[in-house]
Image (cartoon, rainbow, N blue to C red; front, side):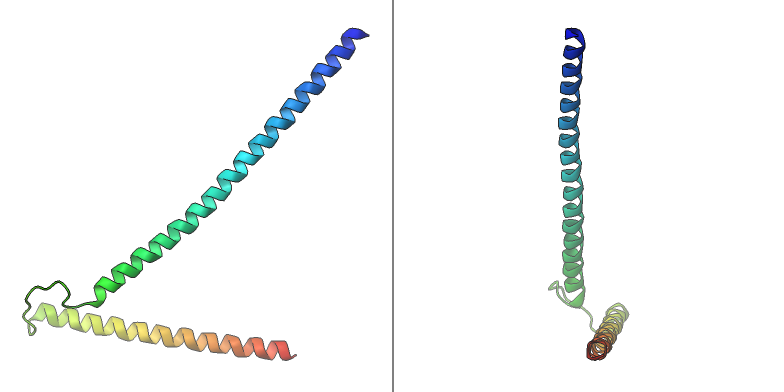
Length: 113
């Protein structure tokens, strides 16, 4: 009948509107997910940049222009700590280089097989 036909058309239109709004919702959700991923990337880059600046400031023992008693206990301890940190950094760099070399040799052997 005519009434059933109108009801079917109205139902079809309602489904079309629902599909449209679902698509829009999925689009907004995907945008939010991508923005969150981008923000996490920026946050990690910013944190690394701040750590690098902090490490650079910690490298200088006498960088503030103030006078120091170079034989004082506090300055001597800071020199010892600085030397220990530098030695640890060199050791870490060397271990990373060795791991990289080992990985490269393993990859070379794997590719030859």
